[in-house]
Length: 199
Length: 410
Image (cartoon, each protein chain N blue to C red):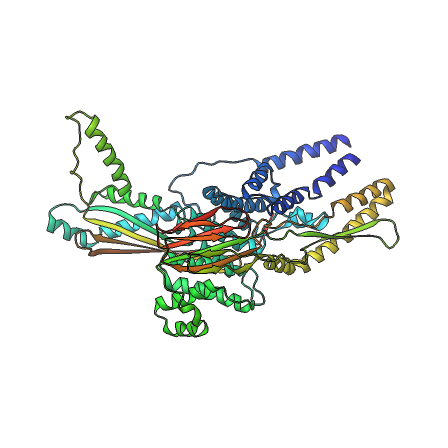
């Protein structure tokens, strides 16, 4: 009887320990995984890819190339988070920068924060680098267009069910004359149902 | 076997909640920083994680540790969200031993108030966009909790804070709607509007060009119209005191045949509400006093009242279940049955957990001034000068628990 009880205890302990242990599984970065229904890496990549594809397929780019005789230089400005979630817009901006650079159709200018670091380095070179390798100030490539935007959400909730509607608006503004040359919009709608019972 | 039984009872007798309640009581007399240190030295039970991080985050906010406060309150918020579903195993534990075996998932007050405290932490951490996100989430949380028969989970302070944040972001329409929602709740509660809220309604209706609403408010409050004259806007939030702790009301009676003792224990709040004290703000010419926007003591009692029928039902059912188990055990082994009866008495404790370090009231004052500095004074602290020279819009948080003044300006 005692042996049976001990055996039962060992089995129960093993099951409990197994349930509590951490498990890790490597996933493909492109794999779509939705856990909470909140904005995630998949949404960020999807929106960035589709919107940049759309912007590069529009007439503004060919018009600029024919009038100026060079590829347009673009800078990504502020993407404002007006949504219900704490979205790290830096990853979204990074996704857009990657899509823009990899397209090969536009020149890309570093952001204000990046530029400051580079200017600091240039100032340092001015004092410390040899004349042959020193980079001069005043040679920066000025952007022709700035991309700005915002992420909005509408949340409708009833008990444990939620509909989350995300709308991402981006616009490309000419730095020369403030003209808006392209406006893009991407919508994502998610139905999220939470369980009413847990173990 | 008997020692094991006693150890088991000790574990279930709710020692952790008494320690937490003692710290909340001490907060009235000691600084938030010292209570924070004492709280950080304790290790919360897995079932009390949400309550622990709610209190921790609030104390970190009052101590000016804003990034840490954000981190703690986000953990508490996530924990409460994940515990919103009903647990089968915890209900069995609560139905057979006591209510503290259920994980603390927060009252409606906690689920909305956590957004307020997070918004303030983000704001004083100079992240107004983060504060705005919290206010949007609070709106969703309040819609989830909305009930046509009660105001459960509908907080004036949340709408008021939303209005302030929207006003700082120059989102006039949203600010006006938030102030109106705060007004609606106060009207339903038959509580006079804080002067600062009335000024907000006047100001926003005027800025939006909503002539009809402005005429209505200016006719209702003609004396306040002349108060809208300064270039500096000062929003003052004052946290007064500490909300009441729950107390246990218990009754032990012999069974009808006198063979065992039966005990029931229910949570309740002390009947007497503490008197609110007020903060004063002066620019040399004007002197304004903070008005109560939210009486958290009242709301905490309403939340418990709403749960009372289910607590009573479960307590009675548990008493019957315990009686039957003891009766059956006594038939087999008289001594073990008596010990088990003793264990059922000791384990019968009321669930006294709540977000028990919140202020007793949240008060609000608004001042428009041309002065470069103002003086803020709270009942227990000395007067503090606040410099307004670096911005035109100012949010100030003060409490009578500490002499610190938190100031956001833009």
